[in-house]
Amino acid sequence: MTADKVSKEIANFAVRCSADAVVLEVVSEATADIPVGAPFVNLLDHASHGKARAFFSVLKQQKSAFGWELNVARRDGAVESMHFAGAVSENCDDEGGETFLIVAAQSRGAVSRVYQDFARLNNRQTDNLRAAQTDLSIRMREQEERDSRFYDELSRLNNELTTAQRELAKKNVELARLNEQKNQFLGIAAHDLRNPLDVIQTYSEFLLEDASAVLSEEQIDFIHKIYSSSAYMLYLVNDFLDYSRIEAGRLDLDKSSSDLSKLCEKVVERSRVIADKKQTEIVFDAAENLPAILIDESKIEQVLSNLIGNAIKFSPAGSCIEIGLIKRGTEFVLSVKDDGPGIAQTEAETLFAPFVRGKTKATGGEKSTGLGLAIVKKIVEGHGGAIAVETAPGRGSTFYVSLPLKKLEN
Image (cartoon, rainbow, N blue to C red; front, side, top):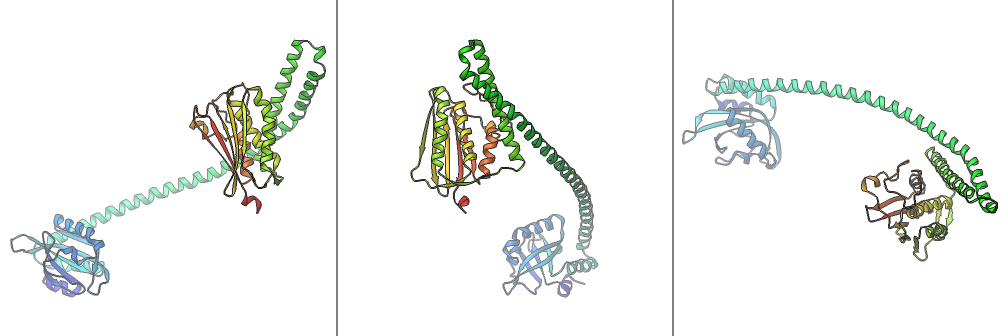
């Protein structure tokens, strides 16, 4: 049996090519235009040219190639996926160089039958083709082994992941339970401590106002310390109580139509008393004709008091705190800018987390609970807004609070 007969019986086309991949002879032609003297890649769709060059490279190196799938450009302009096989030919080119017989078929099985027929030929292609079949079998076994090992490893990792997910789910349930207990404890402790602390502060204030005439200077100093300590403890307890309520999902907002500009003015005027003691100026600038906004006034007042209080706390004597209020698009934007020492980027990233205290020291030695900004963030987000900070060491800090208008009016 000759290569001619093999290709005519079961191949769509067969060609003999030179070592530099040029078509020397069309052995059998069916579905493709195959001009003699044209590069082999011209028989194929443009997208398959790179793969065709790789096929021919393997063919030249191993003297045979099998199992390649390439897209052929047919006579009618359509593209057809075909299976290719090739082997070194016993015929030489005009200069005595090596040539290659390449066969294309519509199925992998047809190409296999080409191999079987080639194996019956008594020429030097036989050894090459048999070697190719042996090499293909080895590579297929190796691939099966690799696939099996990969599947086993994937199954093991999947089982470990499933186990880890179950453990994580259990830990999350336990963490949620402990977090709820923590919030309950904070709430109970804060509530039980607030009343006696309020009494201590009230009576110490009464003594300072009405009994200072009959008390010694040392006794008055003691009462001042009692008053300031009880005030700080009450401030701490109130923050604990607020945070425990928020964490428990009890951020109850009593919204009403409000003039945010007037609310800011009220908080600024109240804050000037503290700022004057530190020789710090507060400047408030609001845009004109701002519309009303639907907010919980007491909660937003808490936000303003905290941000302005922090600005005073970290501002040096003789500095200026700038507070602005504008309408930008469909939201209000409130800004609080100070000339303090600023905050490092690593600290700024955790600034709104609970119980976080930065390394920046208050200029007047004021204390902090580490909860103020965490509470502020929860309140702002509860209103559908957002809070952010721009800061750098030595350049002060500016806090921005945005409160949406459209969302709150709907």
